[in-house]
Length: 116
View 1 (cartoon, rainbow, N blue to C red):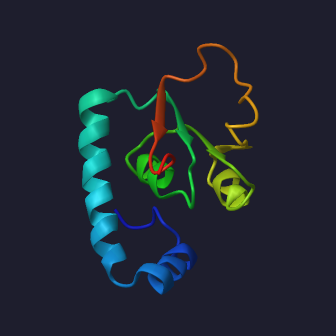
View 2 (view 1 turned 180 degrees about the vertical axis):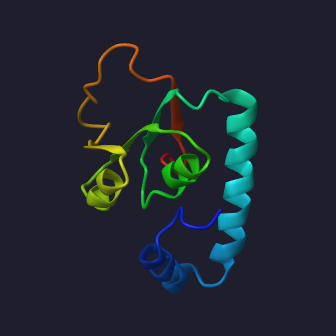
């Protein structure tokens, strides 16, 4: 489970959310392990994470063995971090523009904490 969120990001989160982050991180790991095992166990699926934020969800999925990962953010923040870890990254404000991906290129879409 170690390694899916970089130390720099953990430090940033701890500064804003305090120690409660460790509990959230553990919960999310077990939640996505269960969710992926039950609903999309095929590790070769193409997964798009809409509104990837700092990458917690997408890095958890990568840690769980998924390799065909894509991520969008409304701005380019953290984009380089995704690309360095082999995750396709797109800057896109989905309220203003469409995400141009080939038809049938995405098997699973995850949108966590986007509409709040």
